Image (cartoon, rainbow, N blue to C red):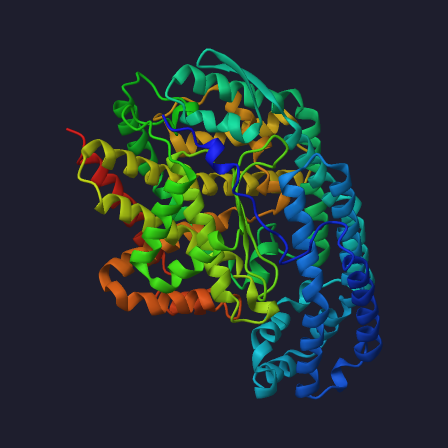
Length: 595
């Protein structure tokens, strides 16, 4: 078995595109300049926006971009540094200071959007159609749509400031606690120490006893600290809904949808279509149980490797596989991915104080993104590498937009990431005729799809349930466990035995507290991509320009308009079913390999 941790150790990112260190001498004057520019901006424009011509208003937008650009970079840098060493008190203090300064400067500038929102709808519509403001047309459209949810300027400022020591403080506490966890477990005759990511990786261990022991140990930590976690969840959800009601949002999830120009009916359709397809999950795990030769499958076994798929990959092998897949698809996309390696924009190794998981970070159009990984050489790590590079590629296409349209609109943020995974899966499938290898590839891909769609749908349903309940009263830890078990049972049915420790899994899902109602976007993106990838298989190279046009759009138009580039209607249930059918076709392919 190949050792991979050592080969990933040298793969550290170079953040010098941003700053030279947390003591970079340019940082204090940057903050001073941003504060001074913000005060000048306030003096020049506050209470005067209605007197500006369209050209003058466009210039105000541009000035705002100039002020915000260095702050975005500084915030990105601080959080990247913190991600690789969550235990360094100096770094924590640095992050806290940057967050505070950014919040204070943001409070100075918050008047701009609020003042625009006071314009009559007819005036905003007229401005949106003025050629001088063409670069900011969608901003003005969204301002008109979201105006009624704004608070007063003082209230918005208060919300920003109180969050620093309120919900943001609780989120940092959660991150600090979970990042500090260390677990002692005997594996393969040797007692070892693991962080959370490493321990969860043991779900891919060949021995079911190790898998189950690892997950019992992992969730025992969360059960031991149930008072802390239930308090964090309750207070963040309660705070969220107090503010939600003050703003006038009709339901918790609409807080995320309105600003992303999505209607709740579309997301309800997404949830419903996904739940209708839970039998696919049952069907798959019944098959996997047979492939593993087990009498029963527990939740600790759902990512277990097949008997003949113990191969681990070196970092160099993973890089070659992913880059070759991109090269076969499109030379420009390959070049974007290659740049991430050449310019050392990836941090790969597992380290004791490094936070878990993986992500892609971007701040401004003029700085290429960075990718954060915990690479351990598993086949799933290759998928993760492709996924996060997909985000980076998406960001590089979005760089054609200005700052306010640079980051992909939320429901489409997973488009390039999941599509990139499909590119690599197809590459691997076309290169092998070996039945065992095909089974391994297909099981990894199907499990990833179920994790991205059905499991995220399950998380989203749980999230909706707890927001509904906590709005009217706090939930105890056992009540949170009970609500979570209901969703687990729906997703897995009788195909998997739900062992008692998994009732604490809700406490280990940071997205629910870090970014409420974000998780549906994973399912949204996965089913969207499955439909898009099916279209690519039908159209071939003719599809690629449409795909790139979707990526380039960033957040400059509604998700409905962006997806329409490919000829799809997000409101049509058949569109979502097309994605489900594409997943089922992979399951049938796997079933055909089993005699």
